[in-house]
Length: 327
Image 1 (cartoon, one colour):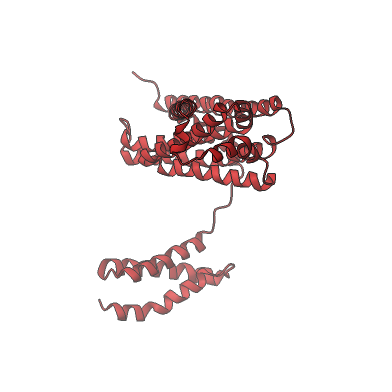
Image 2 (cartoon, rainbow, N blue to C red):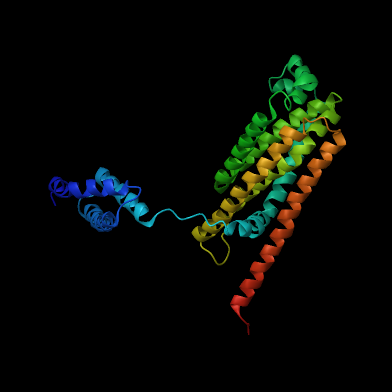
């Protein structure tokens, strides 16, 4: 087939299809023409692929076909009726099924942070090995740690915290399929928490450290652990898919639930950011601030564990009913 001649013969139809695909409100006649040209160009794409697969032309025709298909089918309307189901079923189920992973993640993180903190307290040379001078340590302990929560306006600070934590969680979720990067991200954060905590506790500022961390940190860190657990569950799905599903099927199923978890954690990080921006630096008594953090954290855990367990039990009941009587 002479490719140049073929392009010259059909270029006018391709241009017309592109023009119609860009119309926001095509008339009835234009819609009929759009459908007809879509079918023709899809055939042209098939011919080019099978006979003279020129990469540039295949890419151009593929773009035209996809654009025309999107115009014909239209965007799916948002079904707000699914929101209650998502909040009451899909999200807690996704997080609950990854619970063993984020339990393990939490334990490993806490042990690593405590070990680093104890190392910093017992050996004053450790911070200096990470490039901190005596002046840096004094500035952190006496000023920087506490002022971090109040030196910016609350709305700006909350947005900054929200985006930063969402970025950390996104890295854990996206790299979970490779498993090891998640461990690296968590180790970096545990190292940071351990060094700062060790310095604060070692210099007699434990009340300031835990008092400022507790209102938002319980929920914030738990959400990061959950994100890491969901990501690790996705990665483990293709390593050990189980006796029924193939590796691809197991990975796809875990990723679908992982997307539910990722979407829900955006809201959780927003709540944690509000706590960090408005509650942590507030003038409320320390016990009140910490109590607010504990209550919100407990409500999140109850939401995931109670509703998630119910959702999983409901699926088991449905699976049993679908299987029918045995024997």
